[in-house]
Length: 97
Image 1: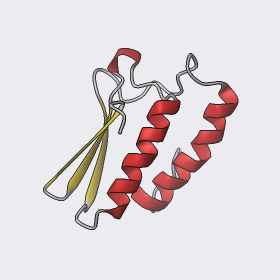
Image 2: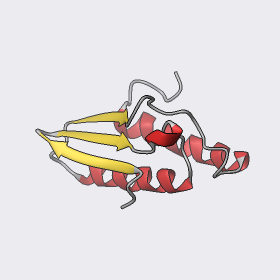
Image 3: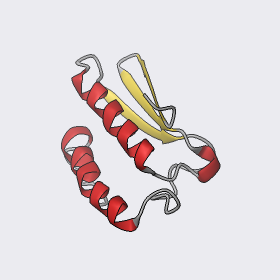
Image 4: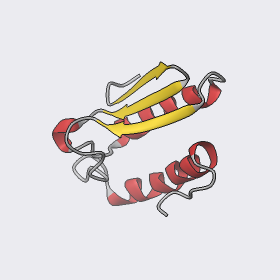
């Protein structure tokens, strides 16, 4: 697993930390892949009852890292990430609402 996304599970709470503080946790392809991997691990863990998503450093997330991704790539990743958020983590709160 990449060090751009960290996972800690304690007391039935999974804490997912976006870990690119020098660039305000801007999403790039490596972080996107790591986030999908961590999300799958959390979904498969029946002991997890809650998920906390946080950003390391001064910001939660600055958005897509334009230096590492083209806009079509970022745009194509967002719907699947939002679907994952909406369907797996927060079923009553659609992503982006």
